[in-house]
Image 1 (cartoon, rainbow, N blue to C red):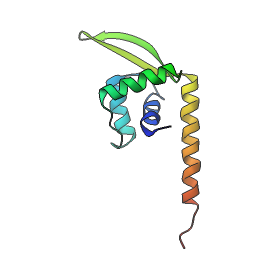
Image 2: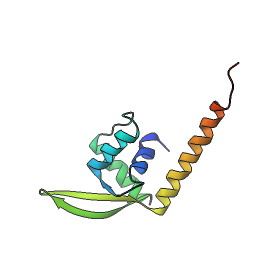
Image 3: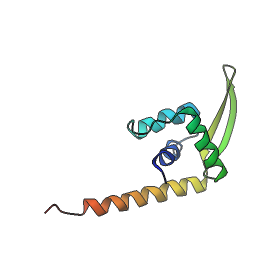
Image 4: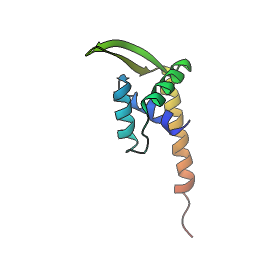
Length: 100
């Protein structure tokens, strides 16, 4: 899983969010390492929805603008957790090595 995808899914782990809130949360969670252009985010959201990892849970209009809220699906939550476990196991390969 690529880092932007990981952080998009992570941004949705605690509550549904709309696009701008996802962008903001991704930047927070990644400590500024991942910054997504709006177009890139929406392409990723469309792909993740097609893959069944996220779903649209609400559409609303705020100040005349459409706002779509996304949430993790069960498969999305499982994929996020599996990736976190994989990364933790990979990190242990390095952290277990004692310097010579």
